[in-house]
Image (cartoon, rainbow, N blue to C red; front, side, top):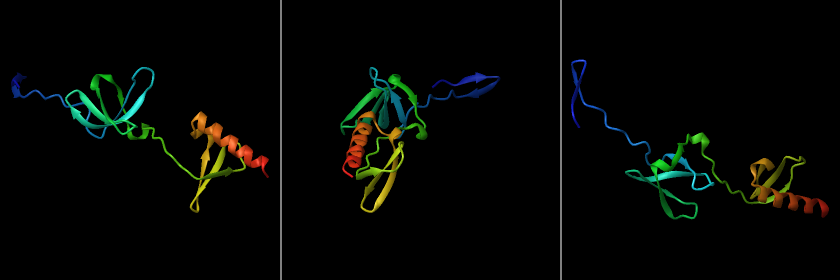
Length: 127
């Protein structure tokens, strides 16, 4: 690093800080499939992360579309239990081990929503 003079003052130029660090959530777009991942290791411009299948992979920093704020991270959440109608057309109940949650249909993937709607319809038909 070379010292320089500016306005008569001697100073050291700042070293460039890494843009990403372990624990950062980032989004990248391989093809037409945007993915959000958490950085587990930084090796220069190579950023490592754990895939959904449990294997480790990496991307280059230049492939990152954006660094995410914690409030922007979308997590797949799995809830299991029995379902029953909630008396509305926008939500249903999930019950397990004495606990109950109300889930909105809008929160489901199209495939899961279809399955839930079919099961609720079958329950109504069996009454």
